[in-house]
Image 1 (cartoon, rainbow, N blue to C red):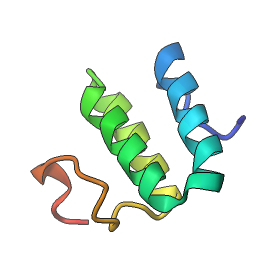
Image 2 (image 1 turned 30 degrees about the horizontal axis):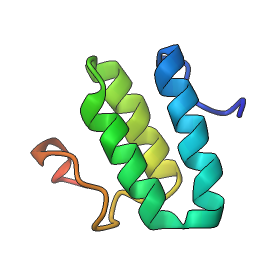
Image 3 (image 1 turned 60 degrees about the vertical axis):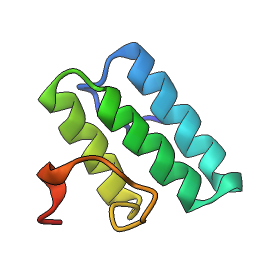
Length: 75
């Protein structure tokens, strides 16, 4: 997936690719859970921002399965 963010490390990029690929069959709840877990495990704010941008692009931020923190309460 060439359109994935570049501030992610190799592991995060690999996981994001898997999550997005599998979500085609498993649905938006899987995508929301996967991206929120990846968000919570990110160490850098820049990585969290990139994962949040992915969630916004795939429109799962408002999904009840997308659980992150109070930082995104404004969305």
